[in-house]
Length: 138
Image (tube, rainbow, N blue to C red):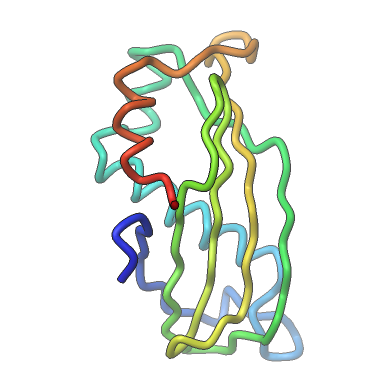
């Protein structure tokens, strides 16, 4: 596994599929959000605590997603997050959804950091930037 990539397993359920029996397109974004959230949690950044104590939240600004092959009911997926770029108040996260190492979907999600109480831009702390930069893909 790439040392700069974080991943989680995700099992697909009936609730994830559409009438055609494949995972509904918007649900891939839910899976990706789970991977991002767990990656941040592993680094010690619980989103609710950040909002409450640091007045900082991440907001999705741009999503560019590509669908290659469908996931189906009961598939065991690997959903990854990898930091591609970091700005003063933004992150580009590369996501991949695979099944048995076969790419099903990939996306780039740009997150911006804002104040939790008024949604105005707020820079990440230098500590957070330092910790996140160690996960930056080369």
